[in-house]
Length: 253
Length: 253
DNA sequence: CGCTGCTTTGAACAACTTCAACTTCTGTGG
DNA sequence: CCACAGAAGTTGAAGTTGTTCAAAGCAGCG
Image 1 (cartoon, protein in one colour):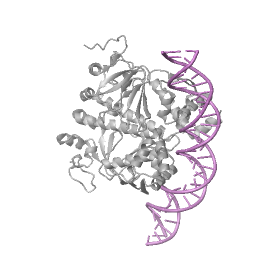
Image 2 (cartoon, rainbow over the protein chains, first blue to last red):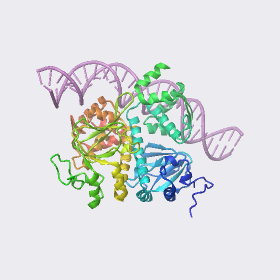
Image 3 (cartoon, rainbow over the protein chains, first blue to last red):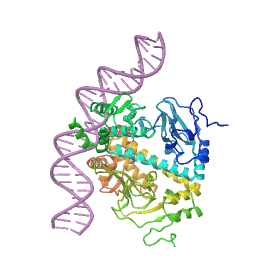
Image 4 (cartoon, chains in turn purple, green, brown, red):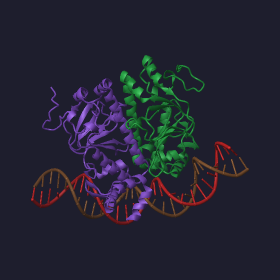
């Protein structure tokens, strides 16, 4: 028998009911007997170590995943053998939604640190969503959010300068930590500068220089992976207005 | 009484059953009595003229839409009063999926030419998906495809040169026409160079220069909005490998 | 016919990348 | 616990690519 009401030694067998990510995850807006049904189909896997893979490109799509703790990056290999980072996934965020259509994963998911995830077999989730209208609704909502978020990112990558891209990235991470109940002004970035640069479509050196400049301008403190945001407004301005704000910030220092 | 089995004078009251986009749309993989139920909830609106809006930013989300004929662009206004084009929508493609989560549209949808759409009230679609497992599945599939496509685009915008962006754009449009049974090598682009540039995160001038260069290199013929693709392989190479292929194409002319 | 808006072209300029060297950090074995 | 090797990050200088500004060419439309 599964015994998912008891926190085991590894801390991974917490029920949805008791999970701190409850409000960010699929269970949002369902409870009681319905939640138990969902709870029952979810598999809690043993934690991934840094650099281990959750799934590979082309591997069969059976489940979607929710990050429980830690973080992952997803990336696609390009024709010329490079990686292209497509996303970072923090606790409470879903992975694998892009694979439903094709039946296999179009990208790789790799742990950036020790990371545990919940695995939700998709066929069983679909069956359950068929029974529980609120679950179907929540699933559609979450997929819609994913589409929305991707478009936000496209907006970012489509137009903006290096300055705007990095500030928008920092704001995005900051807000996501905040939603999860962590500090929005002080946090650790689990990904390397290389991953950030790749994700934002910039050279590592450019990202590094931007970090330095933001720090010199007193907007952030960046000591390796430890980031503190000092001037939120400045970041927002740079993320939003690109060229204009750049001139302002240059002349105001 | 609705009389959706008869093609009316405006050609917009075709049933799903008879619609040429059947295989690309929600009805895919349902038929018979089930299809009629879906058919029944779909509203066929009168065509939009060029530059008319299907929905505005912030307008309440009630329905998703399928393009029946014509085309639209979606864009978000940025802080500095500019537009950022987030997508182009051809026949058979869905609009509005990004609004489910928030309950209101995060972008504007504007017709690029005379365009007719089917409107699908979302609450009724959800109810119906509750009844019909294949419809639920198809809805999830389509949303997943949207996520996948957005990530493809991010991949494009994230890393590539102007050359790679424009060739990938042309290939994408070409493939989408092909799927809809039109020619993949000769078509009209309904959007302006400005919209293309904006979408790809480039200056109009750069896009214009690229079109000229592709033409000079014998890869395409571009006469205003009328495009013919002469050398598919060259486009693919440029879309995939960026720097490398650029040097090749330069020296081989 | 002459406007208006879209597209193209040219030249100067700015931003980002690339290449190369150097520094700092991390983890492993002696 | 220290030394060392490799990885990750930073910094500088030169080189490209794309942007910006300015102006001319073209199509559509009253």
